[in-house]
Length: 250
Ligand code: NAD
Image 1 (tube, rainbow, N blue to C red):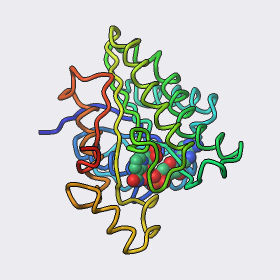
Image 2 (image 1 turned 90 degrees about the vertical axis):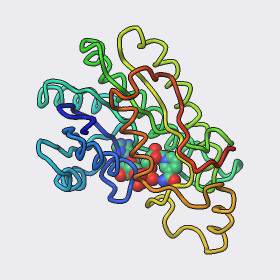
Image 3 (image 1 turned 135 degrees about the vertical axis):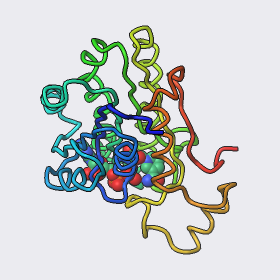
Image 4 (image 1 turned 180 degrees about the vertical axis):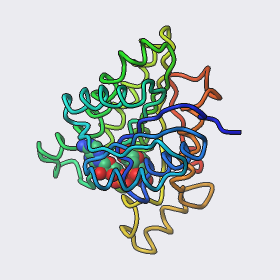
């Protein structure tokens, strides 16, 4: 059964080959969606879109920290597809800094991409979603928001990802009567470019020992949750945060 047949989804930060956004785009395409992959580099985004099964996908450059770029992109995509059903705010950056090492420009960069980008892209699509009366927004948070830090993100990353949880709930409350659902995903330790090759064997073993399921997550594990939240299967789910972490918080 294809869960997104006939639907159109925008996924930000989805050009990275091993990333969570690309995995979601791949699974969405397998489930019949046409996908707009947005990322910083136009060529990389176009190449990622060309990889997807099915037809009608596009890959375009859009810096989510630029409000005008988000507004123009929304207009362009609505013109191209007519109707857009799903927005996944996945673009994010992290910096492994300790509290006292966070300079103002670090704080700005991490808050900008993760939190401001989520707000801007959501604002750009909201008039369309409201007019449709049915849409799903999925925001990518992190286990770092819930337990105050992870291995790769500093306190500013935790703050940005916790901000996403608040934004998600407030947006969900405001737009529930209009048929727009808004949810967040909190991935735990997932093998992607953000995490690859950055831990020694011993450090990795230590991390895995803290995960009851005993393994790192895969981008496909997170994509499955994105698919559920994007599809009508989650029609009565809004304002929630779903953990995809192998039981890390049990
Ligand atoms: P990734 O680095 O592979 O992908 C992030 C993508 O975002 C990149 O393609 C990058 O070019 C893009 N991007 C960066 N700044 C952008 C901007 N201003 N505008 C548009 N695109 C921009 O990372 P990933 O591991 O796939 O992570 C995806 C999301 O999941 C991020 O929000 C990350 O914080 C979150 N996350 C990842 C993990 C993990 O273990 N990998 C865990 C928890 C949360």
